[in-house]
Length: 103
Image 1 (cartoon, rainbow, N blue to C red):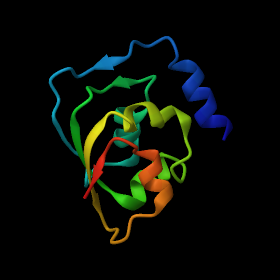
Image 2: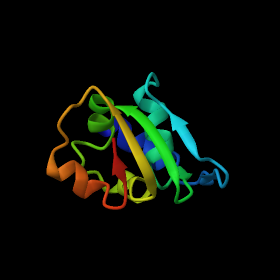
Image 3: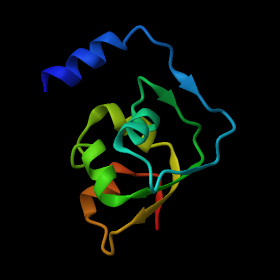
Image 4: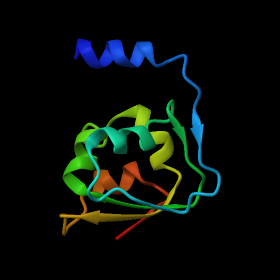
């Protein structure tokens, strides 16, 4: 929507936050905004070996049904993904996380 686009435009001048020593990221009870902060590649640079624990429905919203390009960069870097609230993982989710072990 227009509001989120305006916010994105206003934040383009901000530096990307790097977490070079981050290995575990538990966002199971986090608000959508925090999950977005960590997954959007223009906001945060994650190392290549992070374990992420997150609620499936929230992740689905933040990644716009696993089709959002802005979150794809950091999602490709995840080593392991613990999904809460989902029993069967759809093929398109596995494709969005190509190098990730999904638990």
